[in-house]
Image 1 (spheres, rainbow, N blue to C red):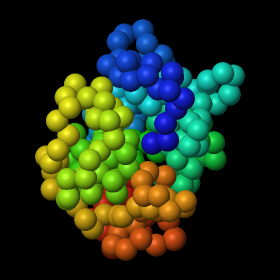
Image 2: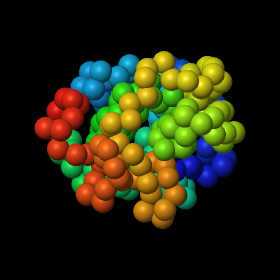
Image 3: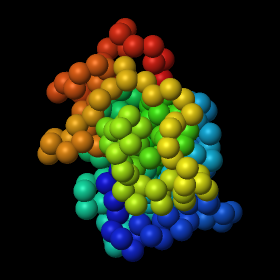
Image 4: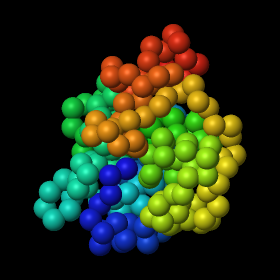
Amino acid sequence: MGRLRPILAAACLAAATPASGTPLDRWAPHISEAAARFGVPEAWIRRLIAAESGGRTMFEGRPITSRAGAMGLMQLMPETWKETRRHLRLGTDPHDPRDNILAGTFYLKMMYERFGYPGLFAAYNAGPARYARHVARGERLPGETIAYVAAVTGSENIGVPTARMRRDIFVVRRADGDEGIGAVAVTGEARSEGLFVSLSTVSTPRY
């Protein structure tokens, strides 16, 4: 997702293996809820939150937001938040801890369904379109993404995903023309109507 300021980002990556008594503990009920709802391991959610925000909702007196505009505990880009919020019928505040965790976990589940493990984390960081090019054509990933995946998984092996890369879920583009997270993502061709298509056309269950 959109990156936090370098100093905070480095601290978050260093904390990507959460210990007891960390800021993440206060969000444990929301993490458990999201894990059960979407079938995602709690450890994945905790490590991703640790890497993205360090479990903090505020930074320098303001709701935590990256320079790119990513918001909240799981650093969701505005368009990603908008569409996941609508799909899941969440509230209007992207910084609400529960709603941010639910939306981010649902998006993480989508990354897993497309890229498997550990590719979902590379896609979450670099963007699904960029990671898809890495898998398909060997396009080099940013060093930040390699470090990110190593932090959240304990391994730098982020080559071919363990699950078959599904090309029928969505493709992604940003409003500024750059491909990546915080984008319009749909089944088949990129369209402007949003992140998801009618569930009648895909096999993804209604969450």
